[in-house]
Image (cartoon, rainbow, N blue to C red; front, side, top):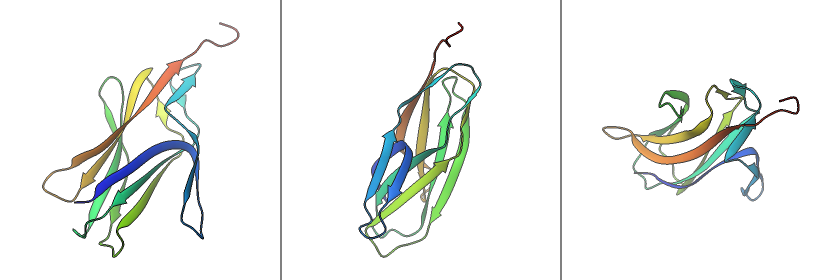
Length: 133
């Protein structure tokens, strides 16, 4: 079964073509909004997986709201690979959030009998007063 090495949410990421190294630009753990619902700017969720030769698998990304509702944001099917590591990035183009509080980005691994939660990254949405408030 593949194993998650890391997952990080950032405003941007850059993958160096020559070395393969990744730079995460402005890591994100919270968003400040003036009104709700709010649309966040484009974000990236970058992850690295250690493969064990077990074949194909899929990774699903979900957003769980503070009230418990979940939305599937994406799914990537990964073919069996020869390498030991696999980098997997999700581009989140403007999440629409309707609630204040602790949201969670959930990474689930599909490939066995049932999905396995691999990671839960918090995304706090904080409502702040505007200058006119």
